[in-house]
Amino acid sequence: MGKRSKKLIADFFMLMALTTAVSYIANPTIYELITAVTLNLVATILKIGARGLLNVEYLATSIVADFHLIPALIIHQLGDVAEATSLVWGAVVANIVSIVIMLIEAILGSLSEDEEEF
Image (cartoon, rainbow, N blue to C red; front, side, top):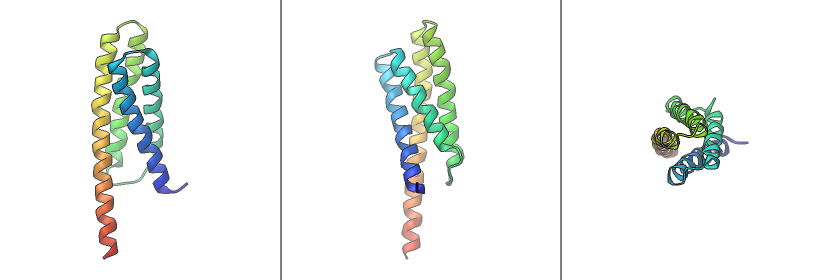
């Protein structure tokens, strides 16, 4: 599997984690939250060992989201859906920052490819 396809898969899981977390906020069911946690953990695992200018920051945002989503899952199971939802908001913010970093890396990568052509 090539570098670009690995990046594509990691980015896919990151976007899915974000959209599923937002879906949980709109409709707080345990199934939405389990899916968001799972997708975010997969995205985190896929980011480990990736190379790039901002990959440390990219991985850090994913870990921050994990540290919000996992307790949210436990708290939701304990019955405090409002508190779980507020933690999921934290994960959404972390995932948005991750998406911004992903876009910055894509732009910087595109610029460096353009420079190599000249």
